[in-house]
Image (cartoon, rainbow, N blue to C red; front, side, top):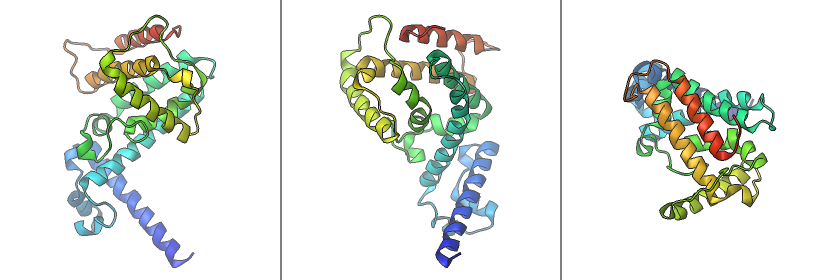
Length: 242
């Protein structure tokens, strides 16, 4: 092993140790506890030494978010791959159910990745290949979009005020899917498709966030039936059968 290789291995090992420490602090005490000073104290090194690895706390949190997102994708992918492509409803439901289960089991990781401002975590917003859910979406749902046409079963009017933004997002999504190896025909990415994806994500995220944060407006001891009925309703709009 060359000296250069040894240095690279040492750096990679140290980065993994830093991220593991950051994840532990996050889970135990929340994101406010994840600071360069706290990690330096835990690892027995100086805070300035950490700046050789991360430029700032935001840079550190971005890498922690990346690490968490990779774990989420690793959790969802096997659930998706176990279901044949010929069963789109089951595949969509598997991703949605898996995301909810992961969020409920990892509330602080969910909060950091999906409920923290992009400024704090140093992440771009609303870019399908760059924001954290976008990367998970591309890795997990990309094959679904390439194999199936997701479009409303009935008429759907896309609000005029959203058309410009949805068009830009569609173009960005198509480029990101292609870069990830998923070739999606243009007719499968109509504005109605993008509008449905936006609605689906907003409703699913809203439900999951209310559960994670215990913010349902009335007492719900078991929110799973409500979640399942929402999935069935959304699937019927797309034209999938439940």
